Length: 171
Length: 293
Image (cartoon, rainbow over all chains, first blue to last red):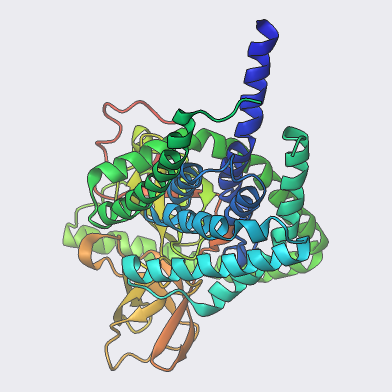
């Protein structure tokens, strides 16, 4: 019976990898980097991780997982509670609704799909900023962060791909 | 292979329905949290600070190696510029020596005048030095998380400064963590003075790197390079703290470049101007608290 139990623990830990890795990215994302102007162009690492896992393993990053990631992000970044949770839930919905198409795409097209979804996510954020903070986000900052987020995606996707092969080799 | 039984045939659509409800429930929960947070419900704030407290040790550990790398980089670039830097410092030193004698004269004169007026000596202030462990690189807010909280004597509304000038003020306090609202944040408004003309204004953040001066009197003519200091009006910030210099004037918008380089924040001092003397009683001594000016 013992090996069976250990196998279950192992499988459970592996299945938790996407959520745990994404939560780790939320934490790493707020570590001060001491780079000038970084806050202006800061790429949205959390969005990249969430996108990667929902596209590749939607069974392991469920809406409640996206919600948890968003809440932790809100708390550590200091955004009003619920904002990133809301954005990531909508991102989850957008990806799942197109999942049949997305999972067949080549990397280049998937990258383009990420750009579209990142744009959607940023626009939702602008709407929420207007509603909650009654403030407009500087369009230049928005553009810089969006471009940088899209530009850095392949790197994060590569790292997550390695993690996927290491922890979830069957997929 | 087992064929799906009757139970499963009913269960499958039920599961889809349940999943849909979960999704909608989570969306409703996040909207609810936003509404509660907007209404400044204390429980939302408590929950936030509780989680922040739990993550501060991790963030503290993670931010140290990054800080070391950044410091090493700065050291290397400092070493490469050592000659030019030395030259600059010599000139500055000469200028500062002049200022020192001026300051000494003014100080003794000031003391004499205070004695003549029987002015009460200013109460010494106490402060807590705290490390910045998380930096919000978002476009929504401008704030940082520090690894000191109520346990160390940090309280809401305290002023955060560095040696360069004003950083902002403490917005949320947990047991071992606190969030500092930077003066560049959209919700930050600091009563300030233009040092030379003594014209009053409000320095309002807009999440950009350079906040704006609002409510300037019509006769105030701010010039690029004018120093901006806190005015102390409204009782939120003490008067006379250096804030920044006017960096751009035009189109009715006056922008100020803060003295503090926010991306480089490492340690900040959280100053309590109201609680002087009472902090030492009761509370256990924190890691890095000093008092005096």
